[in-house]
Image (cartoon, rainbow, N blue to C red):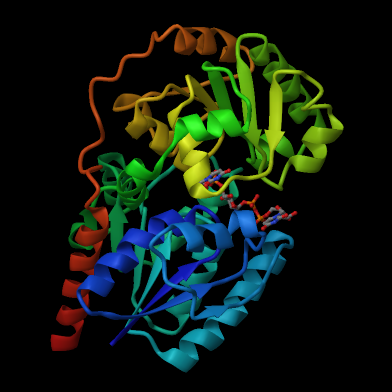
Length: 361
Ligand code: UD1
Ligand code: UDP
């Protein structure tokens, strides 16, 4: 019996690590595919060095391209892989193009699919991730959810409740497992930051692709930097546009390369506030109790608002929300249910039960 895990982009790695580790402890035979969607050392390899992740058995090396080019290349590569290795089940993570392609390839071959982080919805079809989420969920046999709202969305879409499970959040398993390895002071010294600083990340197409929108955000970040130093570990997607717009032409804006997991989380842990459009960072800041201002009109992770430190910000509201965050004016009374460091084990148990059930049928 072999399980096939599909990863490819940065957010996949911290989600897959605890699931693969829990299944390995149960003695399940597993294969790990890296599609090659992300390929820079700092977007990919560093996570394999730092996290409890085995080396991929194969890297399809698809690289970058348009959505059609990238998704199609992954689809072709994964079909060949699945035909050769004939896994009993495919496990897919999150909402990236590698996730979508894996779900399509597996379902056409009649291989059952487990989707980790199922049911999230932004209800914004201009986001490529929303399309990936809807298609992947529709094709999946096991829908493994990080929050109760995800269960409600799937139920409304008519998914059989027996296939839906609230499992907690494997991204948070990884954070909790590495908490002792985080060292904010080391990062502060390395980047020569004062005690009060902000971390910012930006990579959503809606924020960084169009120079006019990106220009507005650069001006906003410069205003924010008058309140506190800002460190931006910049995703490669928007780098050229943001730098051409003069993002680092401000003495208190520090643009750095994307960071490895431990450096990044160390930096976040020591920050007074975070400005972001990332999905994972909304969850990690909620867990660490650090105010998070999400520069997006919506979020597929509303639990980070109702049970965490996240607030949606627009260019018009960001600076006043930032002032609240810097003055310590953000209340958090609750944490999301089951974000306790054991999601990987729950997922492993459910996957194993499903495989045994299918075997016995
Ligand atoms: C992808 C995901 C997005 C996720 C993000 C996490 C899709 C549709 N989008 O967006 O949901 O939030 O990853 O980081 O799957 N590039 C490099 N080096 C790399 C990888 C990318 O330079 O190692 C550059 C290339 O110019 C590429 C661009 O980044 O064209 C975008 O990469 P891509 O994988 O297409 O999408 P992301 O924006 O990274
Ligand atoms: N991350 C990292 N270094 C960075 C930025 C992010 O290690 O410089 C980690 C962090 O754990 C984050 C995850 O990568 O949650 C995924 O980040 P990204 O914003 O790329 O993806 P998203 O969650 O938006 O899909």
